Length: 142
Picture 1 (cartoon, rainbow, N blue to C red):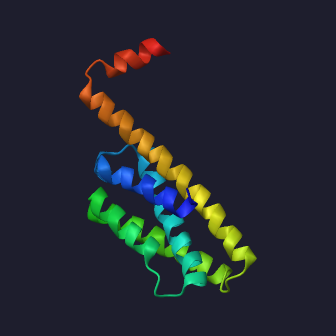
Picture 2: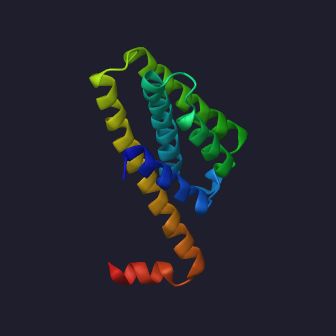
Picture 3: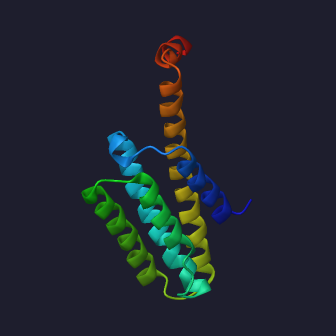
């Protein structure tokens, strides 16, 4: 499975089991901000090679903000992180070449890791909500 497709699948898993941003613990909120930054980087790097009409990663970011239903301040933070990531990579890689493709792969790995962590955290939240004994089961397992 290609990295962009894998990240898309992971982002879709975030959509499948929504948890509002304001309900997330601080470390997950930070991961959301880091993911927004990585999406901005990915958007810039993809546009470098595919052209400015390509909106693949921007549309994923829009979907992420819709799903998270964050309060206005956090939504603005996520959008700012996306824009900062975009500007950073756009200025660093203005041309499509081997270096920009390698950077795109590195950002994809980073985004994949963040999406997996967020997805795992959401599964744990939903398991805990589904099973009142989940926390006791987790404690016994350790």
